[in-house]
Length: 63
Image 1: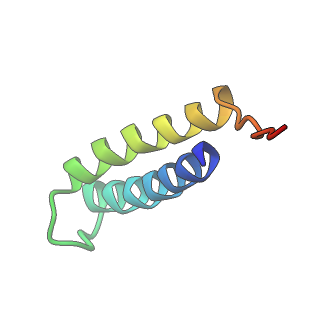
Image 2: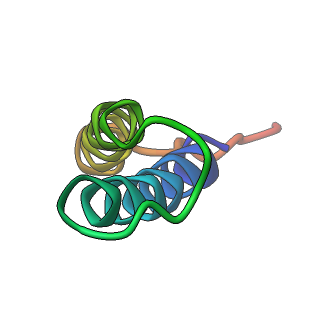
């Protein structure tokens, strides 16, 4: 479950970061502030990558 959430955070952060950086340095593709997208994208991307790196899913063993 943690791995799925980390994957969603990482992919969402990458998309938001790409759109935000494109908005800062070029064409603004959405109506939101590009700086807000860049900051939130970097936060979500770092959080997702660190969750993938340091947290492991433990299998549930029923005896």
